[in-house]
Every structure is written in C-alpha cells, then in structure tokens.
Amino acid sequence: MVTRWLFSTNAKDIGTLYLMFAIFTGLLGTAFSVLIRLELSAPGSQFLAGDHQLYNVIATSHGIMMIYFMVVPAMAGFGNYMVPVL
Picture 1 (tube, rainbow, N blue to C red):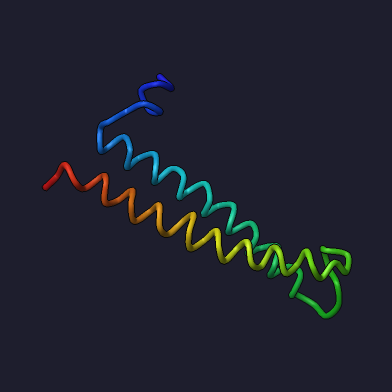
Picture 2: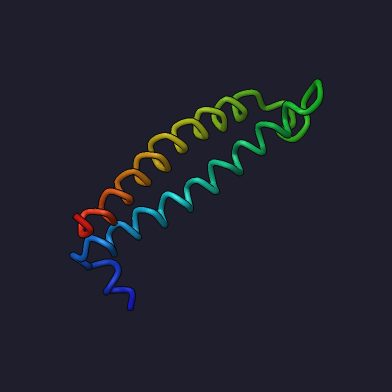
C-alpha cells in the first residue's frame, strides 16, 4: 500500500500527496503561529524564557513554512489533482 503512494505515476495520487504535505506543514506553521501569539499575549517573556533568538527563529520559520511548504505545495497539489479533469 505504501509503495502505491510513493512510486505512483497517477496524477491524482501525486496531487493527494502534495495536499497531504501541505496540510501537515500548515498545521505545523499554525502551531508556530500560536506560539508566537502566546509569547506576545502579555508584556515580557511568557513561554520562551527570554530567548529572543528563538523567537526570531520561530517567526522566520513560520513565514517560510507557510509560504514555501504550505501554499506552494497546495497549489501544485490542486494543479496535479485537476490535470486529469481537463
């Protein structure tokens, strides 16, 4: 069953893999967003124990992840999924 998905040449299967990856990274990016908002919920350090570099890394990772690992694969996934319809 796993080889059907990993070695598939079917456009709908490949599109589904892209969409599953986009959903997974979207959830991870959302978790980063929640952590950012929790840190900014009150003055001072809340959850990151004053590690400002970690906050910057999480904020940057959130942006990169949501654009390049969620939006781009989602567009490619919808494209692959819709190709056989045409």
